[in-house]
Length: 307
Image 1: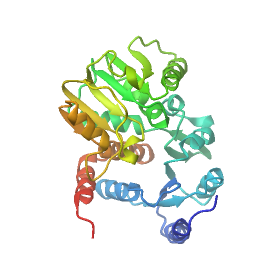
Image 2 (image 1 turned 180 degrees about the vertical axis):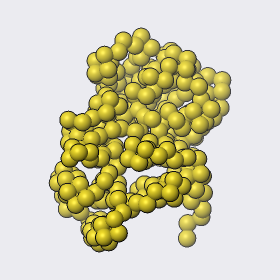
Image 3 (image 1 turned 90 degrees about the horizontal axis):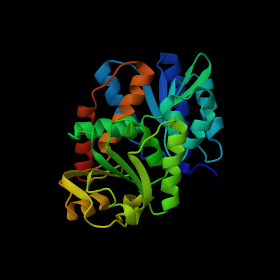
Image 4 (image 1 turned 90 degrees about the vertical axis):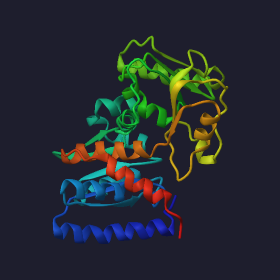
């Protein structure tokens, strides 16, 4: 598949930036995906860089669907320092960095952070760390919590390990296709070598089993279509949080559904986005930025009226 004209323009800009940045000696980073024009990563990392006093350039790197590996290799051969990976390339990035995966990435089966060290490509997955940190920012104590995870795709797989390690009393995965949920739980347990009686899986119609839930996390893509997942009523314990990994200027369809079903608190995934970026930033620079002011900046931008 060829890159669209707008993406090609971004690639040309990237190449133009590349030469100027190399002459200035600035480390180069980028987010790679298809599409990638909508990404907020350049703004996030620019704010982190300003906050920490680190001089860098962070750009957009569109990749043709059939040329991810070639695009990544070219970026690093031309002196690039690190890449964030977004849809639809996280599993390809996992394959590409197979020899040097972090434990998080190995268990997730996906990579969203790439860097090169001593000529070798390394990969990590920071999505789950970003989610857990954001839940804690929202005042959620996962130790002993009952957590329902909706979805069994790449998004759910990417956050499962940090959630499983956070001390939940119960972690139940549900999906429209119940077999996929059971496969995800089984795959993770085998890969981790863990024995977790707290983890279970089933279909969406079984979402209430083991509830009511203290935290319900939507890792499905339902909110992209402005439609909530098909869930039974009565899922939420008193004081419960409903968390959608999607985000937007207005409450998502899942958040609206959860509020109607009695969730005391609702949140979208903008804090997770900033949190996973902060963890990537730390991996690359060994400097830990403060996500909170960056999150406030992005939230204000989302709330601003369109011109």
